Length: 502
Ligand code: NAI
Ligand code: MG
Image (cartoon, rainbow, N blue to C red):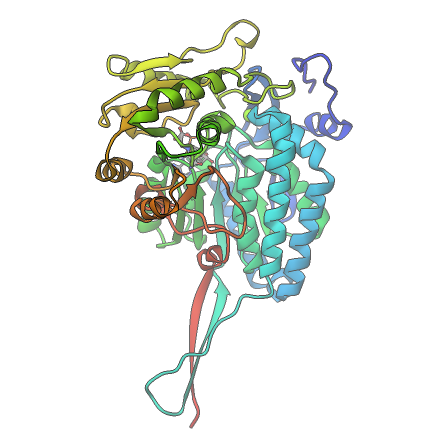
């Protein structure tokens, strides 16, 4: 299908155009591309223009069942089940190289489907996805057990780490290809087989990845890709008796449902990476220019559609006006627009998400002051779902907008005075994903990092994430740690073997 509303000077890669005109796309089950059993399809749109990009198959219960069987067979009897860690490493590395080779095209598909600036897709999303696969390729032949000294004589006790089995991976739309690799890489390194369900808003790069997976040489059934909706596709994965584990990134509400489904089915293992309401704290002794730039980046990167978004900004009172004025000035220089222009902030993923965000501003309108932004952009951008950087001030931590994840370019800003106060207010949230601290006092920075209940704390920077560094949430931000060596725990079972030495 033709992509008609690109800015005039943009020409897509021929591969991108070829991919877009190859729809409607099918499901990848057992190495074959097949239509949904129901024959149903859905449309994915470009959030910058509202235009339909492609149709994809809408998976249902029967397709999940077929994928679960294909994945089981690949796990127990196919060539994958016989491969050693070196062979799995080779396949992961080859897939990473294919992603690098097709980076321009994948970046264009990501920007069309999600809306984010092309230069971000090209510099961040796609190369990070490849790096993630390479990092776990390195682990595939290093998954070890240990020998255990026990109190009984004449016993040899050792552990081995075995793959969990069939893994369901359900991912969101904010970093589509990257989130796919966050799940696939450690799962495959450990020897599992996977059913991947991309978000219904952004199926394109997962589908293209499916083609590259075949090219890389993964045996049939090792990776199955089911496009479709949360219900019925995602929910059927979580309820299936033949799926051993679900790895999920998305909303806390759905995370809760996934645990319920696990509890009432086969007690499948669950790892959850959910929302956040992360405090970003600027002390009066911080490097002001860096702190202001960092606060801007913390909330407006990816149009605020990030689980780690620094959405609660706390500024020590003596520098409150200086930081706020600096942030407003910085935010007003953010260029919002179609990701194929020189914009550095794209649209909100959907009309529904945009209206959710505006709803938060409406609900608390009597108790907040909107300093800048707050209204949907019209004119040339009217067909897309654009909201400019939005900064609101408040002095009431109990407001809905201060407690719930807005998941958009909206930061709530407030002043603080005392140490005990900031420790308490930073932790006054059901979430615990991340936090930022800005100060030149290194002792104070570490004390606060220890006092904050969050899975990741950044000091004098914000948003750094890399494959080797564990990532995940305290409290209602999730269960388990992805990334780094820790992620291998999510995708392996420990087996203890007792040997009598006679
Ligand atoms: P969501 O949690 O509904 O969607 C995430 C994934 O879960 C998608 O693949 C979706 O199809 C699937 N899903 C939905 N319902 C399901 C169910 N009952 N069983 C199994 N899978 C299901 O998130 P949504 O609606 O796209 O966004 C809503 C809010 O979620 C956002 O405003 C934000 O607060 C949060 N969110 C957090 C993300 C994160 O990175 N932690 C990413 C995306 C959303
Ligand atoms: Mg889309």
